Image 1 (tube, helix red, strand yellow):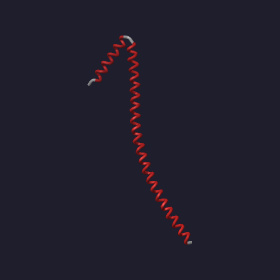
Image 2 (cartoon, one colour):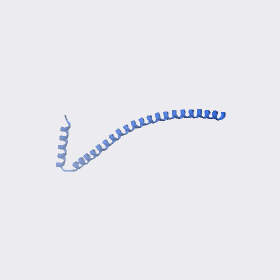
Image 3 (cartoon, one colour):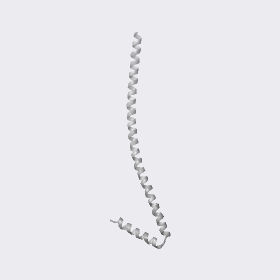
Image 4 (tube, one colour):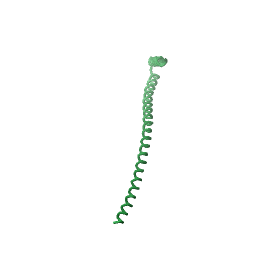
Length: 98
C-alpha cells in the first residue's frame, strides 16, 4: 500500500510538471498566433493598397490606349478631324488651368 501511495505521489508530481509545461507552451503559442495575426493584417493592408494602386494604373492605361487610338485615327483622318482634336485640346487646357 505504501508503494502505491509513493508511486501515485510521484505520478502526480510528474503530471503537474507536464501540465505546467503544457500551459507554458499554450501561452507561447497564443503569443505566436497573435504576432502572426498582426503581421498578416499588416501584410493584407499593404496588399490591398498595392492592389488598388495597380487597378487604378490598369484603368488609366486603358484610358490612355483609348486616347492614343483616337489620336492615331485623327492623325490618319481628315483636316476636319484634326481641327476637332485641336479644339478639344484647347478646351481641356482651359478646364485644367485654374
